[in-house]
Image (cartoon, rainbow, N blue to C red; front, side):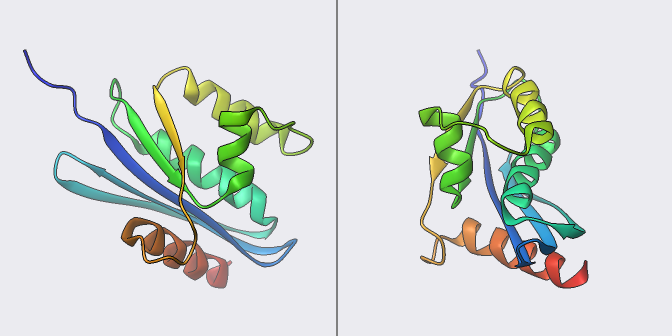
Length: 133
């Protein structure tokens, strides 16, 4: 019987001004490979970029595997794990809820700028994307 391997995703969002130019990045690790997905928006908020990074990371993940998703966003992680109220960004929360039905996700908060390699890479990608927006 084959062991189902976990997919590890590090996500981050960035914004130059809030609202302002935004970027997001997700770093996926599975099957000994690393995959990066990224994007930007010319006028957005930091929280939208944090949510979009998680959404796009999950959309890029292989199906039928458990996922551990790391984020330095307490907004994202605590809403998903502690039931924080969703006051805005309902369109993105809806997309995230749909993805949560397809994956078993273990949400993990990681301290930003603390030397965690996956988080540092996701942060760099998101910041670069914000500069490009």
